[in-house]
Amino acid sequence: MTNEFKIGKSAVTVTNRLGLGTNKVGGHNLFQDLKDENGYALVKEALNGGITLLDTAYMYGLGRSEEIIGDVIKDHDRSKIVLATKAAQDPDKDHQLNNSPQFLTAAVDDALKRLKTDYLDIFYIHFPDKDTPKAEAVGALSRLKEAGKIRAIGVSNFSLEQIKEANTDGLVDIVEDQYSLVHRQPEEAEFPYLQENQISFVPYFPLAAGLLTGKYSADDAEKFKQYTPEQYTNILAALDKVRTIATAHDATVAQTLIAWYLNNPAISVVIPGARTAKQVHSNLAAQKVALSPAEYEQIDQAFSQI
Image (cartoon, rainbow, N blue to C red):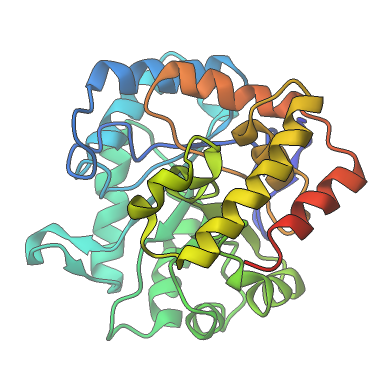
């Protein structure tokens, strides 16, 4: 499934709606036992497999993820890669959140150096701080856009009210937020607002931190205490229904659910993460899962009451 998709009102287009989330690329502060060589290999696998959007952030290894990606893309046509990164945690203030124009301007320059490029396709304010007016923060990004340093303006982890404030002048192109079949809150109010205002949406944790890969059973409930026992049981029952559909397509549960997101009209790009090149290769196969409208609806309904 490789159809071109425009990011918000910007000039950025994505030629493949399957991207790559890279928090496990150099994210040594987030995950144990990560190896840089695996990070290099999986980014290469993604690009060689036709993925064009790479999603990273300063907080993924305090810049290390960006450095690894910068090394890899030197061997590829930069014009065919959509680079997205994020910042808000101020290293000079114990990583407290900072959305000030001065900080964001410096953060973009620092990211450009680590990524070894002269422009970012998408730059997100990673988290909102408490004090900076959101329209003021986005105004700083607009000036960076005019200067050619970024091509599309994004916000991440913003509430709907904060998104509206950030978009006061109609400058927000894309929102990245938590969304999955077991975390569907954005559907109610956020999605309609984004669609009305030509703002693209990218979900993170589409596989719910591994829960939706289908590899967990009733014995693993302790690992997912954020869900009540009843919710967890219902999620497993829903995954059993997905497994039946997956089998019909000779696919895994994870591939089938990624295909569901790729078919979701509210979603612009899906960015499942990976720890190894083998996992990237598996994610790429999701593009071959051709869900029928009935199967799409069956999956949607299976998770609707959780």
